[in-house]
Length: 266
Image 1 (spheres, rainbow, N blue to C red):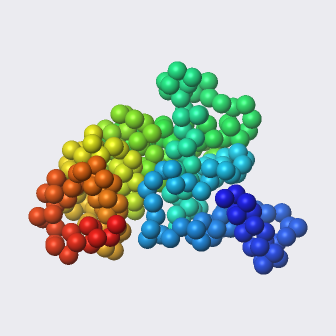
Image 2 (cartoon, rainbow, N blue to C red; image 1 turned 180 degrees about the vertical axis):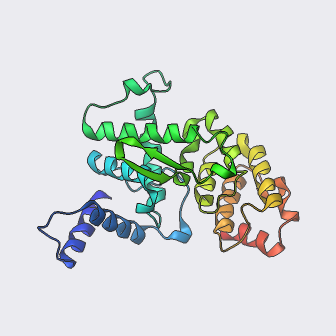
């Protein structure tokens, strides 16, 4: 896929007469977004972490994308943010686990060159930020986190998709986050929940869905993208012989048209 990106970039630079000039990060980011948007249809975004189009990107490119994503997710959109999150999944164990499978200590992180160091620091920042959310309240949900080495501030919602990477530690954080009114973060909360195995997580998912239904902090509506996302869950859980709508009781609570949309969409 990297070859496809390079070809797209060259055509873009020629079209806009940028060839031969120094390419700024903002220009490269814009080209990257446009390239991803041609490959990924927003209404059909996959939550499958194996469906990543950035795996064959050079280390330098991966380091740039991840570090930019951590510090400012608004740089990316239209599926690019999902793809970078999936790239993070593909690299996490390599950088964040030691040879025995335990958590990598900060002092032992891979800093063998600037790109490895950049990736490790970015992933460690994600881990640190997520752990700080375990007891976060609604008053703090839009807190601005400060990343000293980039001298920049950013909203933290885009990191939620990485919660399952924290294994059991991530579940407690996820359960707290799902009680907050996070409108813009819905997609990444759903992305995170999707990564947990249906057989072991179905009871937790039931509790989350019923909480959302009762408290209306995330709405079951077509305009929010929630019904399409629920259709992804319905299909995944159905493959494990679990009718999540029936199991949760939502099929008797939601409007029949909504239930049909969820079941038929996939």
